[in-house]
Image (cartoon, rainbow over all chains, first blue to last red):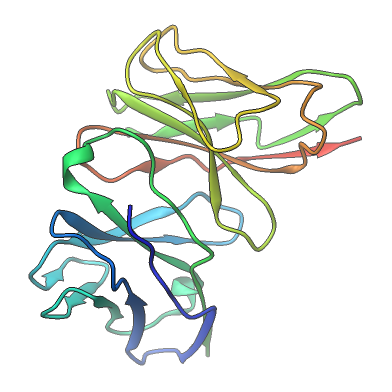
Amino acid sequence: DAKTTQPNSMESNEEEPVHLPCNHSTISGTDYIHWYRQLPSQGPEYVIHGLTSNVNNRMASLAIAEDRKSSTLILHRATLRDAAVYYCILRDAWRGSQGNLIFGKGTKLSVKP
Amino acid sequence: DGGITQSPKYLFRKEGQNVTLSCEQNLNHDAMYWYRQDPGQGLRLIYYSQIVNDFQKGDIAEGYSVSREKKESFPLTVTSAQKNPTAFYLCASRTGTGPQHFGDGTRLSIL
């Protein structure tokens, strides 16, 4: 699976939007972009994933660049409960459940009241 | 509610002792995974299993063993051969190309 690059940390104010970037310049045509987040002392939690088109769900939006070499996770209104480490992961669609997801260090998001 | 249950939440190991971490899922998922997480680091794969009675080593399998006798259960044994076992251990499961579902982890420490 191709590698991703994320900032080590970001800060946001409560009630404001947050844009978490991820670079994946070596992404292949069959790689899905997945985002997970991990709250302190808990297991990671699935947030969203996409292939080419922008995606929205109740938790967040995923904006994918036209060349797919970068993506942005958007939290529309940050809350204190959104403070977590956010992981951007690429996963080849053809691998199915084979193998694992490769979690890097992610971006630690802090949310200020 | 369906999910993954890991137990215990905290575990202490004495020198030379084997300990077993439990992972049970009622999601009917075929694949299950064990990860290790050290402070400030990402997750590293220990073992994974695609189907019952079959499993594969991950990146850091030395000092660990697993079994998959039932679809719902994937216990991890940390053996005395694992010299640095202190870490946060996470179990996950998935089906097909769906997202991985994680348990809340077991924190293992050495006495």
